Image 1 (cartoon, rainbow, N blue to C red):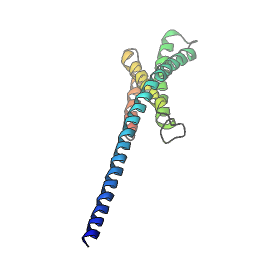
Image 2: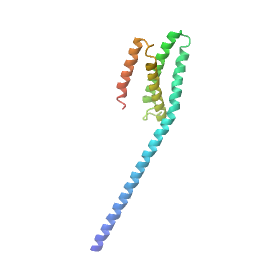
Image 3: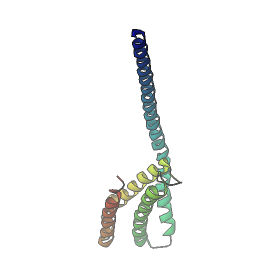
Image 4: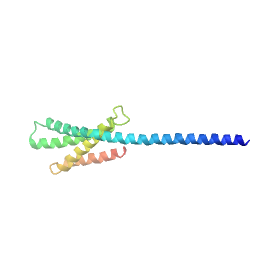
Length: 155
């Protein structure tokens, strides 16, 4: 009888040891996944740098090309509005087209478009605030306010 008890105790001890080994393996696997994810985040962030630089250059040159035949004062106003609209389009593409759940989901493109759009929007508003007409300022402030409301649902 005591042999049966010792066998059952040894079986339960071996089972608990195997369970603890499997738990430790799963914990080590989850830790390794975290490391891989953080590396991929930095890789995506590094790849997003050229994307946002080329996005900024593309929007600026597109606006300059489209307004090349206009007089200088009107051309500058149209370029400001065009870069602002380009930044909004970039944010829309980043959150809807290159989202994780979409078939075009790509984090590096998403990060590049977000950073580029924020830079374009900030550069357009901060650097050219004095030369922007008041009705355009109202449009830009209202649009940014609406974007913050919409983006609050994503975060």
